[in-house]
Structures are given as structure tokens and as C-alpha cells.
Length: 266
Image 1 (tube, helix red, strand yellow):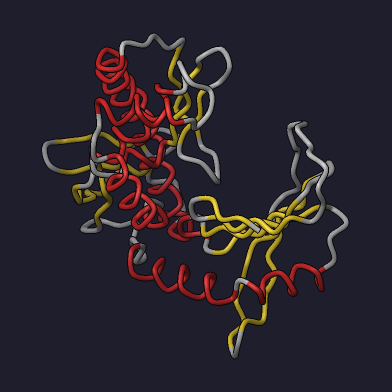
Image 2: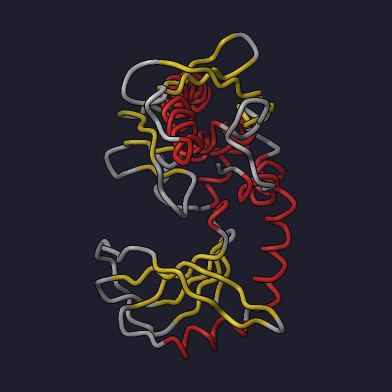
């Protein structure tokens, strides 16, 4: 069994399977760990899979990915082997990801700094969010019911994050591409559930929008990391040497991202 970042992987068979997976809609379930019932979201892959994987993913908490034929008993048995890790990571999540009220006076992180929300009445069909001085100003249409108010605010803030990330990530990628002397094809803002970034065989870079919440040093680590894959499509010694040449403290940045990563969520 191996550990990768914040994910435990329990190997079920030894045959490699390199086909891209399609997955089921996450379903809520509960694991009994010690004296506690731990809720988790179960995602079953629709193609053959080698592993049962446990991950702590933002405010969603525990997420389990398993083969279609994996029984709940087998998932429970593997979970017991990693019960200490699951308990510890969930405790850390509570520390780094306190609930964020979607209302005036609440705050959200932007590049590591807390920015206050200012909610006003607006027009149109949906809530719209803009940065005004030191606040995010969300205008919510009058017709939206009170029960849907928080969701409307959240949707507006999420849309703002993605727009902000699209410009900020490209700006930083251009800087680090120059430092690394590489050329990438394009940069896309993505929304994956288990990775911060990726670089395709064609040198398309994808960066998770949630990094717009992170301190700049951590965002820069992920961007520089993926740009190094333009030259080295693996994690060889040459890959890490190239990254270290422009970012000697990459290890500290990676550890900090592992620590606060679960809290980068709304």
C-alpha cells in the first residue's frame, strides 16, 4: 500500500489499468471507526480499477473511490487499516476549514488573505459578484427566495473565483515559464476533486481554481511544478532539480499545501 499526498491507496490487484475512468455520482454512506460513525461520499468507477482510495477533499470531508464490484465489507476492512490516518486528517480538516457563512460580514480567502463579503440587493436572474476595494460585493436579485439566498451568494462567489483565477493563473504561469525557460500551450482553470494541477502530453496546463484561495507561494509551487512537466513528464531527479533551481524551498511549500489544502474550499 502506498501514500500519495493526502490520499491512501489500497492495492486490490497487480494488473495496471491505464484507461481513463468514468465514475458514478457520489453517494453518502457511513463508516464505523472506533466509537464514531464517519460519513463519507462513495464514488464507484465504472471501469476496472486497481484500488480503494481514501481522500480528504475540502469541506466534503472523507471521499472513498472504489471499483464497481467492491463490497461495503471490503471498503470497511480497508478503512479500519487506515482508521488512525482518517481520524487525524478529519481532525485537521476541522481546524483548517471552519464553516464560512455566506452572508454580509462573512469572509473568504483570496490569495491567502481574508476578504469580507458585502451582500446587496440587485437585479437580473442570478447573483453577481465583483471586487470593490477591500471586499467582494455580491448583488442578489430580489426574486430569489430566502431559503436559496446562501446558495445564490455561493454561486456568485464561485463564479468570481473562476474569473479571477483565469487571469491570475495565466499571469503567474507566464512569469514562471520565463524563469524555467519553457513554453506551455495554454492554461485552463479546472475543478478536479483530487489534484491541484496537471500537464498534458501537449503541454496544456490545468490548475485547480481553489488555489486562488491559497497564499501566492503555494499557488506558485503548483504552477511551477506543472510547468516543469513540460520538459520532464515524470518525477525524475531531473524534474526535481529543475524545480529546485528556481524554487529551492519547494519542499516547504508542498508540505504547507498538504497541511492547509483541505481548507481551500467553500
